[in-house]
Amino acid sequence: MTSSFPSLPLPARTIRSDIAESSILRLPNTNPSPSGLRSPYPPDVRTFSTRTFNSAGLTFIPGPVNMSKHSAAQPSHRSSPTYPSLVERARLEDQLYSMLLDGPRIDILLKLPYEVATYILCFMDMATLAKAAIISKAWKQLSEDSEIWRSIFLYQRRWKINIPASQPVSTYNVTHQYWDVARKEAASTHSLLDWKRLCRDRKALEARWKSMPAKTKLIGHEDSVYCIQFDSTKIVTGSRDHTIKFWDARTLQCTSTLEGHSLSVLCLQFNERMMVSGSSDKTIIVWDMKTQKPHTRLYGHTAGVLDVCFDDQYIISCSKDTSIRVWDVRTMALLKIMVGHRGPVNAVQLHQGQVVSASGDELVKLWDVATGLCIRDFVGHKRGLACVQFDGETIVSGSNDKTIRIWEAATGKCTRVLTGHDDLVRTLHFDQNRIVSGSYDCTVKVWDMKTGECTLNLSSGHVSWVFDVQFSCSRIISTSQDKNIVVWDFAGDIDTTFFG
Image (tube, rainbow, N blue to C red; front, side, top):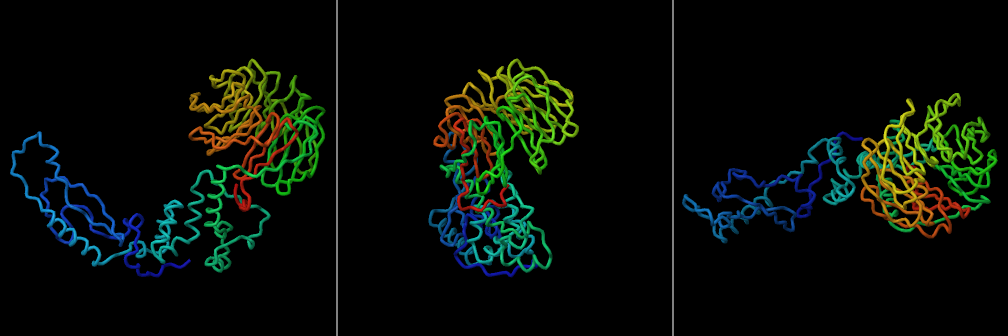
């Protein structure tokens, strides 16, 4: 990267006032005026500036507003000041305009070192940077800097970058001006990405969440499909047919079928090393993800295992027997049993040593795993709960009362109630931007996390109860009693390889 950027002359009469007014030195609206020009207005008159833009994109300052006309009820004990006439005011305005137009103009940005100029532009959002690029050729060249676009992308909290481990650096789409420099300096993978294109594609992808996506059905299970999880390479589903199936996330073809449970597979979770599944057969199986073989089977629940989750310390399971069990993820030993619900515990979520549970007794509970004690109850649903998710700060729950509730984990306060489903809310998944829910009304709905508005209603995918949903930045995948797995694809022709 060069240490300085050539200063190019700004084209006359083409400066965009709404973009460049802060970077072009001009006569400010202060008193006294610059260049020793004395103001014709008395100092006791309040002046309100109304900017007027001309074809050159510059501004001039009209005369004052005499506020004494609006204060007639209060008598003045001083002599009235003398104001310029309209003709004299117009003449003064013409003088100021000529001074600005004919005087020297300085583009501060181009006087700065290249690194400083690009650093300043890093604080712009996409829309502002796009406007800045049309000010001049010099600004356009500055706005093409990849580091600026990288900063814009990474600033978006809901946008994540994913660098596939198997992706060779030489195949990345890079901007031409940085290719030779990157090869010589052995720059990191991040510096080789075309960040401007990534920003453009990610913004386009976000806009597609407002319209109906393309859908594909995966057919293979012989009965209801109860649970799903997926990542960038695979989709994993569990079914009432007692099996777990692996699907290729790109081709959507079934790659393997796992058998181990003797009854319905009700829940599962996996990472790169292991998978944990729970079943109506009252057992939990820990699978080796590399060999896809059972590693350990956990016994203890006296009824069907309705949900499981785990991290690098614990495996958490919940059951129709109303209990929550905590297992050591390394030794597979049972550590404790947490009891407090008065009905089946239908869902659990683990986050940094805390567990949130949802039960048919209409309660959401927050537990401390280390002590096994209930920290707080969340009261508000009118009927039993079917699903819950927890990210450490926010809890979202779905119920047979047809509503979704958003809670503050720290206070127990319900901050929003979402209504729109016509039957039990069986499943949900959320991130900082949106909530996706599935219901026994056979629909999948997308909600704005901040406003609570339902932004999309997917009603044409399933003909029976929706049991589970998961989503990424480009897909929703839902499962149903109708034996189908539906992939709702928002990406289309957008390359999502690097989107997390």
